[in-house]
Image (spheres, rainbow, N blue to C red):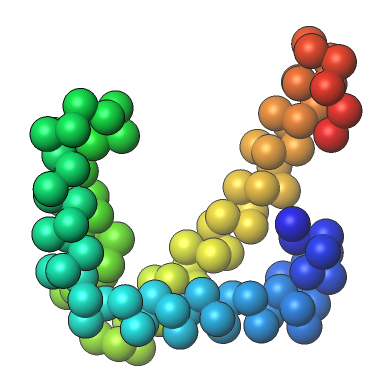
Length: 105
């Protein structure tokens, strides 16, 4: 996916992507209570993704204790950390899959 966006964080398509993610995140924050209410309805579903700390983790991801500027910086950090993770862990996993399961990456 990153290669499609220019291959680096400095590429114009990736910067557009990051800016769009930050704008979307800031637009969603005012609706955090509504979104968390919908997720709360699913807590008793038995789905494994809904665990004991689901609501606390979701609330923390909205960064509601931060100003809009701080929240934008928080999301920029999330994007940067994800990019770094892809550059290391994902590539290692892809190589492992190629070696163990003969799945090309």
